[in-house]
Image (cartoon, rainbow, N blue to C red; front, side, top):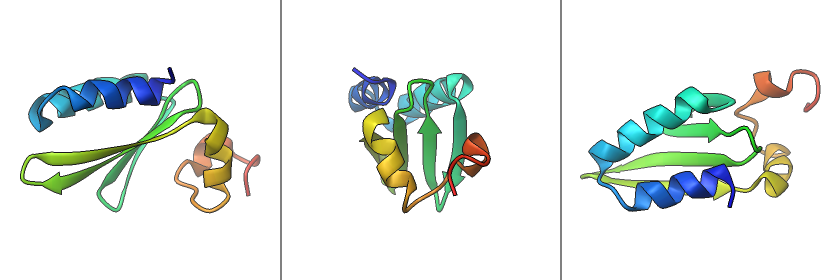
Length: 89
């Protein structure tokens, strides 16, 4: 299971307040972290990515992008430009 899938599974089991603590802990270990249009993007060392968005009223959504699919996504959406300096244009 990818690190992004593991994080998503952990977040499903907790409320938003506890989830924010888990997210903060994950960002310290992440390869890269960025906030884009109120969505938190976390790239893990295995290449997988989480996109976490607050929905209001104590709810959040967590998307998981596998390492196998991240390069397909980066063709259209490039939040991690500084991680791939010169490699992805």
